[in-house]
Length: 275
Image 1 (cartoon, rainbow, N blue to C red):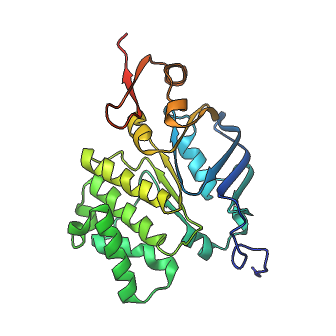
Image 2 (tube, rainbow, N blue to C red):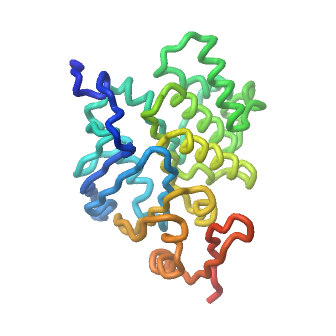
Image 3 (tube, one colour):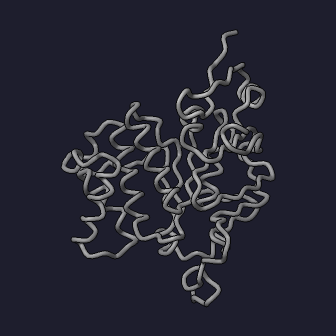
């Protein structure tokens, strides 16, 4: 592929807009089921966006389409350029994805798995190790550095891969997209909050952060924006206060709830009602 001034490889991406991802009219059907139904969404830099919705709503599918793992009808632009115009080597520096499950059976140590995130960066070995060490400390997995990856628990593996993705994005500059698909699913209470604190720190530093998450209260506590999806369509989109209404939640999830406020931080708390 030849590079011109109009490609993401050489162009100045700072165009005066903070839209990192612009997805328009995405449609996808598989096995007779509509996964995305004329779906359009913009994701902004400097913001943590949580994708919510029941099982099978289209959340993980949307993430896979945005990052290019799945193809769909419609358009996806990253920082103003079609995703397919990005050279793979450049995209790997600016887009990091933590999937629900990561398959790895080799007997690498935790440190070696995290250092896999430096492969797109072409760094000297000492610098690569330094960055990996910093990201491991950020996620709280330094003590797993010498452990063999196959011996780790599900939650420990998830945290190791989170550190790997952060390592991958260490040179992303202002063009940074972090996608996390259920990053707290295998984590205990403390590690759930630590993972979301790191995600929020990334957003505050200028990254466009998107997380798929099922816990409505964690989403309300940490996300700037909540997008509730059902049947491949957006059912609600706004701040936690705007999106998490009893009407919205019961309509999407089919269960009555009560909404209250956190006594200190004032974000909405969702309590399931008895039937």
